[in-house]
Image 1: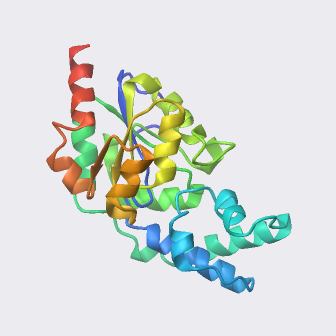
Image 2: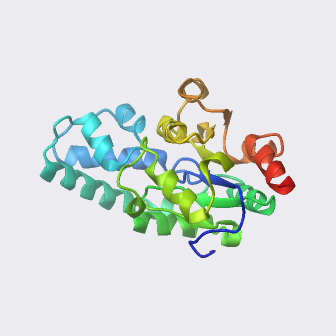
Image 3: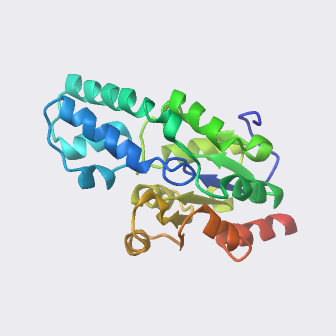
Length: 234
């Protein structure tokens, strides 16, 4: 995979990873559910799933208000341990590698704007196996605040050397859309993470597609295609 440093390309596309490129949203929900159960907390799976995409601290605090710091750390540790048991099961969505390659081949810098823990991100990068199509990536180590704060997007843009006015973000959660809006980056949303098209559009998604393959099929006419056309003319 490419070096995790600034690309000479002038415009770029950022991708969320979990639920957008990797079919992992429901595994994260299950891991959090089991973590809560281990601590005697009965949290509905649907409530957990709707918060997947937030950072662990935000997810816990939204479901367990005034959660003590020691319990918060125990829950995060338990989630991490359970989720790691799902690693062998994880798969990328159909056509992800072709989508990343097409974006890179069109002249755009490609970044993985992930707030996953470093070890989970390494697993995801191995699953994606996207070679030189990816120019930079982030992990939870790169941001103080998690989504819906825009810190991760800002960090990934800085690594690419691209400004927010020259970028598009692809995600699957309402939190991705809020993060993009905070810095003026339009968001293409995918429903493969389990959130409905109506909710994603209500949150402000510029475009909505079913999954990476669906986006790839409409890439030229999408925001990404139009951004690439502008980059090629620059």
